[in-house]
Length: 196
Image 1: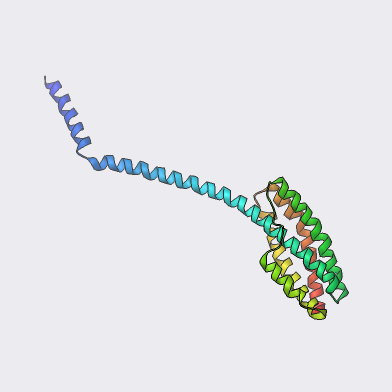
Image 2 (image 1 turned 180 degrees about the vertical axis):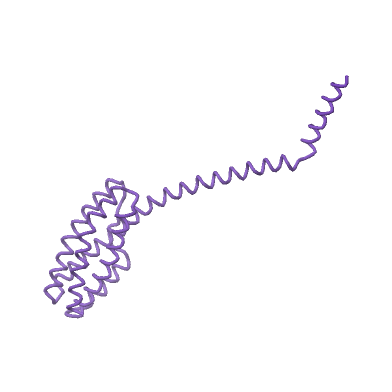
């Protein structure tokens, strides 16, 4: 009888303890809900990282394509408008080298099922229009200045992609093209010293 009373008493205390302490149950539920939110946020973060990597690759290809098209268009104009023989020769090199790189980039984009832009950016159009208004030595100076600025940016962008890109094919394209861009930059800086 004593044993039965003891077991009944413990059962009653346990029942009171569980129902009499709703904060404990709420805290457990809150903790579980918070854990679920944290896990969900972590899953979203991972998805954003994956999207970011793909976005960086596409952004690089888009910028490289527009930059390459701009180099060709400006090179075609400069090969006829430039007064300085070195500027003309450099402009022709831009048409040849960037035309080749553009074709390789198109192949890469096709492999990645990515559609490249078919025209230059608005800023590049403005630069083209401004240069088209100039002639003679003034044209040469502005074209050379534009080429120095553009190639400094190109070298930085291609170096970053070659070093830190997530996609092996895009990294390989950047690494392969980088030495040509660096040689362009060296050439145009030497020309810049002469015309400016």
